[in-house]
Image (cartoon, rainbow over the protein chains, first blue to last red):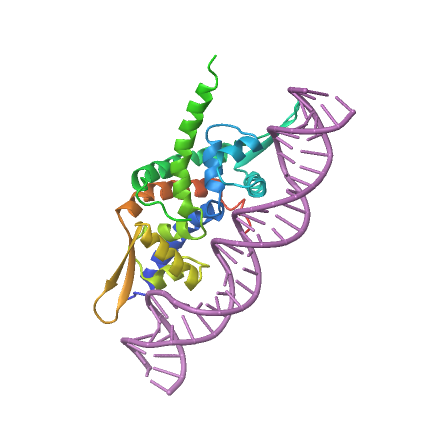
Length: 121
Length: 121
DNA sequence: CATTCGTACTAGTAAAAAACAAGCGACTCT
DNA sequence: AGAGTCGCTTGTTTTTTACTAGTACGAATG
């Protein structure tokens, strides 16, 4: 029985699958990123818009998260030229491609976290 | 023009949508949960299996995360009776219902984070 | 003019979360 | 006996997030 060969092949396949998901959660597994992206799904927003929509986030965290998301190419930051100067954030093509997954998560939460089990935080 | 009434209605709709997503990220936005759930998608695992599969996690974090996920009804913990005693973790129906979203995320990461942009962590 | 408000951040400190390391008792194998 | 695995727990350290106060700028108001 060459059992040592078969588990290795399975483990390699398992590792490959988890690696992509792990990479997604490198940023989604940090506080606020998922909700920020969900908020941007409705369209471009300014800093203050996002601050109001993402309830509970501080300026510092919002600023830092946006910087990371822009750095990762998921969000695009643009500066409007005319008075008043306004910064705007919107999803890139990569970011937009994430929305189906976020929609799934939202739908799942509506069905499975329907207020009966609010995880304490 | 009753403009004050219309933005309120829109904001309420936006809040309602974000609330479900925010709830999902109450646990998905914490380090390790997404990857743990992804690992359990392949079937029930023991603690040590999970420890090995979720590369980089410590015993403490794994123990704590599993406890939370079990408490949230997403993961089920069962204890095998016969020698040796073995604890096993598997996804509940709620947990299984999450997998389409995780699959989306994994597929997205494969297409959009194809090694060219590894966010530093 | 001065004041207030909104904007988009920054900087420093405090608190919470995560990482790190060692340990436990039970069990199996050599 | 020792060594290893299991499924955790405990305590300390480090990192991340929360909190607070501030900045410079522009627009609106008195």
